[in-house]
Image (cartoon, rainbow, N blue to C red; front, side):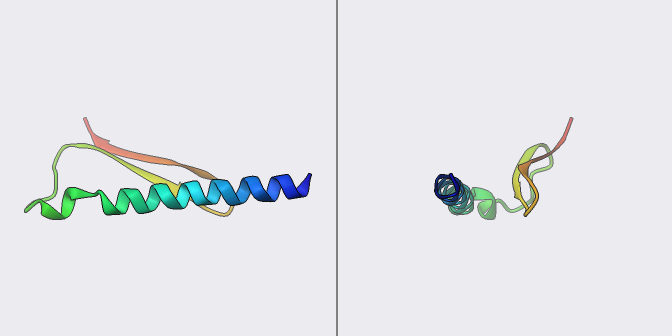
Amino acid sequence: MFRGLGVGTLVAGGVFAAVAVAAFLTDPSYLASEPARQGVRVVPVLTAERAGVFLQGTW
């Protein structure tokens, strides 16, 4: 049982890492002269206790 849990945790960590690297490499915001004033920002959050998504925006 613990072997399966360990493998699942390893795979999930790899998926989170791949998503974080892909988001970093495909972020075109460095091309903009000014920061965007409108829109929604989605930030993945991963801590020792939980994982989730932080949403921030202007409506």
